[in-house]
Length: 114
Length: 115
Image 1 (tube, rainbow over the protein chains, first blue to last red):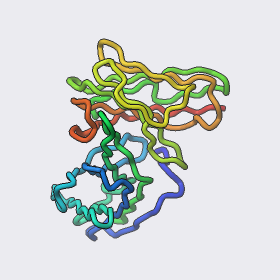
Image 2 (tube, chains in turn green, red):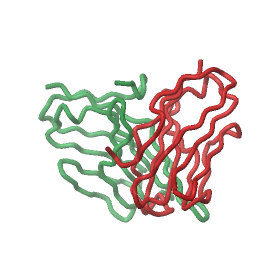
Image 3 (cartoon, each protein chain N blue to C red):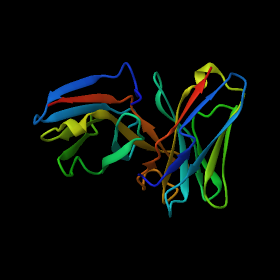
Image 4 (cartoon, rainbow over the protein chains, first blue to last red):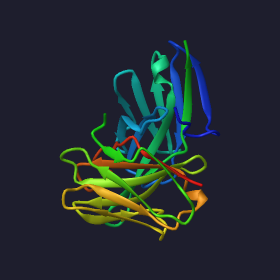
C-alpha cells in the first residue's frame, strides 16, 4: 500500500497489549474532537469522538480522554490487534464566525506485532 | 466502502497542466469537504461546500478551485500544476453544514503525481 508519511511518530506494540496514542491540540476554543484511523491506501476512517463538555468517552475497545487544561487528547486501544496497525489522527473542530473547520494533527503510526 | 466515491484513483501529469478530481458524496450528505494530504504537511483542509454553496475555505491556493453541482457531486480543479502539488486529495462528506456537529466520512482519495 501507499505510505501516508515517512516521518511520523511511531508506536510499536505487541498483539494483546494496550496502546495509548497521544495528541496535543492547539485551539482552546475547539469544541469537538475526533480520532480517525487511516490504513495504507485508504481514506481516514472515523473511530470515536468527544465533545468538549466531556472528559472521557468509551467505544468498543477504544477510549478517548480529553484534558482541556493542558489541551491534550488520548486514544486508548485495548487488546491491540494486528488489524489495528494504521496511522491515527486526532482532529479538532474550531468554531469560527458562522462556520467551523476540522484541523488534523500530523498523525501517529501504530505498528502491532503478532 | 465508505459511500464516498472519488475518481480518478491515480493521476500522473506534467507541470503546468490542469486536472479535475471528482467526488460523489455519501447518499443523503449535503456537505462536501476537500483535503490535501502530503508527506510533510499531513491532512490540510482546502474547502467545503454545503448544498451547492461554498461554506468554508482553508489553505486552498488560488490555482485551485472547486464547485458543488445540483446533484451534490463536487469537483476540485487544480491548474498550473507544480511538483509540490503531488499529494493525495481526499473528499469527505457529512449530512449537515457544520463539521462540529457531523461526522465526516472520507473517500479513498485521488493520488496526484506531477512530473
